[in-house]
Image 1 (tube, rainbow, N blue to C red):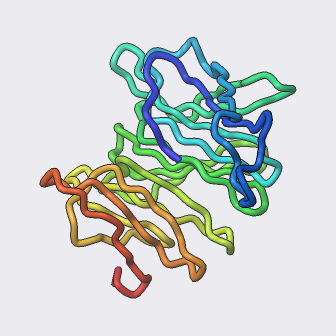
Image 2 (image 1 turned 180 degrees about the vertical axis):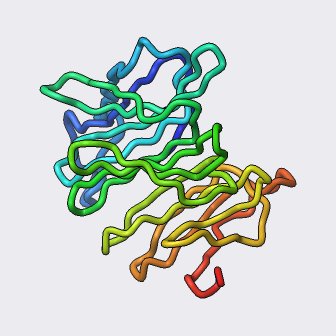
Amino acid sequence: MKGIIFFSLILMSLTLTNFQYVGSADIVAPGYYEWHIEEIDLNTNIAYISSLTLNSNDEPFIVYGDNVEGIANVHFAYQQNNVWESELISSYSNSPSIAVNNNGRKYISYHNYSSNDLMVASYYDNQWNHQSLDDSGGLDSDIICDEEDEIHISYRSVNNNLKYWHNTSKGIDAVGYYPSIALDSKNNPHISYYYHSNKWKGSQHRVPFSFY
């Protein structure tokens, strides 16, 4: 899940505080939900392009970009003893997205401005390990894990070409911005994106063979 947040990083969660059934149908009446708002990082300068995921224990993890004196950075936020902590993932980077696999391993995709590479950081052996996946760029990245704990990423190159990564980089015959990826029950990727001609392209279904 991605979004844009300005000035400070804030988490909103919807909780059911009370409910009632309407008629004989199991319909929860509106007005009984409350948004719980937490301020995650007030020290950053213009936090934006945030991405949120939950692990199997419903613990939230957030990645976000900031801009300090014109330098973009990627941060990772998590809760420790009910207190939000934040750490720097990569400098001169942006377009982060986060996913957690079934074993709890965290993956962060992002674009590195120094090399113009699509990068992925995975957490194991008590440290973040960074790997370059595509030297054509990794803007607007969105990452997801499948049931076999493999990662899939939608993104665009520095030339604004829409791309998809799973084990290797695959081009899509489209120019698109802000892609979002989801997997169906057979792990086929579905990618929605903003078309460059200011028209919504919708959801584009791509089975694995169509990328070759």
